[in-house]
Image 1 (spheres, one colour):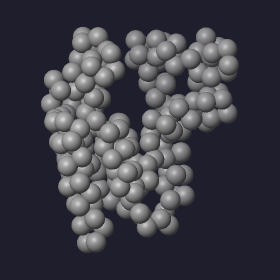
Image 2 (cartoon, one colour; image 1 turned 90 degrees about the vertical axis):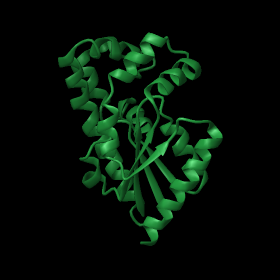
Image 3 (cartoon, one colour; image 1 turned 120 degrees about the horizontal axis):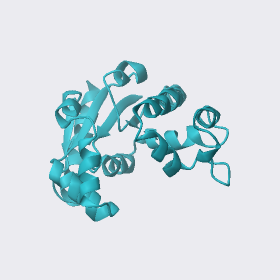
Length: 201
């Protein structure tokens, strides 16, 4: 297995790059998908979240009401720290299990992690880290145009993330996604060639 960490700021196009890599034969392990699994009823984080935040975060069908949880956590640093302390270890453990399940694969496994840190490299045994990058104004425009966000909200979401320079410092390879979808396909072709070179080396 060639384990590739993939990250990028909101609006940078990480998911688009992941899709293009899957189209070339990679297997995707998506932290966002796992985050939804661990808070689902029966998931590792469901009961601890209810114990910490109470029944008001539980929807009628038993699932976590994500907007209600966000409203409680994101305005309160202590509550947010508690949320992260419950969910992050559960997500990390699930990611590690997926890695173990795929360890004997001889293919490329992409671990898409929005909040990738230096600790993920040894923790998941990553062979390389790829950062999807674009200028801040491009990311904001995409959030407004593609997700229907209010411009001020989009700017605040981008500003609240890890700094672009900090993210780029983790990179073994940077995908420039400041252009069109066609440009991105060309960028991912170059990335795939680089991956093949790393695997051969």
